[in-house]
Length: 282
Ligand SMILES: Cc1ncc(C[n+]2csc(CCOP(=O)(O)OP(=O)(O)O)c2C)c(N)n1
Ligand SMILES: [Mg+2]
Image (tube, rainbow, N blue to C red; front, side, top):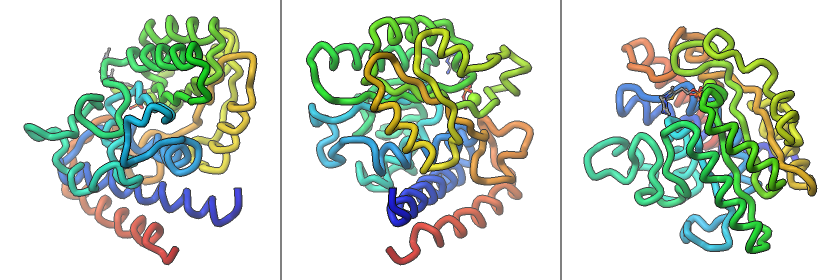
C-alpha cells in the first residue's frame, strides 16, 4: 500500500468515526463502544478490499458483508454513508418510525445491508450459508463477517465455525472484534474466552491476531487471508471498545451509552478534530 493509499484509508476512518459520534449525539446515545471498535476494519473493507457498487448494492457479483454483531448498526451505517450507498443526512433518522435505518441492520430496509442481524450468533451462520452457496456456484466472490468477542458466548457461533472449517470456506473471512468487553463488563470476567486465536486454530481456521486500529495491518492480514487456499480463515482484531476516542475508551460502561452534557462536549470536540483530518485537501 502506498503512503497515499494509507492516508486515504485513515481519512475514511476519521469520517466513519465522526459520523458514529454525530449519530450518537443526534439520538442522545446508543451502541457507541462496539461501533467505534470496528471503524478501521470497515474503512479497509469498503475503502480497499471489497468489491461492490454503491449505486447497485444488490449487484450479483458483489462481495457480501455481514455484521453479525448487529447492535453495531450505527457503525455500519456510518461507513455505508461515507462510501455513498445513501446520503449521510438520512442516517440521522436512526430508529425513528419508518426509517430505513433501524438500530440493528435489516437487509430489507437498508441499501448495502446483506443480512438482517442483531440476535447474536445468527449472522455468522448466515455468512456461512452465503459463502457455501458461492462456493457451490464456483464464483470468486468473498464474504466478510464481523463477530463480537462477547458474541462468542453464543453456542451458535461455534456450530457455524465447525461448518465453515469443515467445508474449508476460504471465501469467508471471519473477523472477531476482540475489544475485550461485552454488554455488562469484561469478557474475561463474564465468560472467559481464553485464547481466541488458539481456539479458532483448534477449530480448523488459519488464524492470526492483528492490531484492529491499524488500517495497514488489517489490510495486510486480509491480503494474507485471501492467499489461503486450503482452510477457513479468521482474523482476530485486537481492538478497544470505544476505539479512537480515549474519553469513551475509559468510561466504565461504554456499551450502550446515554449521553451526559460532558459526553456531548467531548463528541463535539472529537468531531471537529476528525473533520479536520478527512476534510484535509485530497
Ligand atoms: C441472542 C442475543 N442475546 C443477547 C443480546 C443482547 N446483547 C446485545 S449486544 C450484547 C453484547 C455483545 O458483546 P460483544 O459481542 O462483545 O459486542 P461489542 O463489544 O462489540 O459491542 C448483548 C448480550 C442479543 N443481541 N442477542
Ligand atoms: Mg466486545
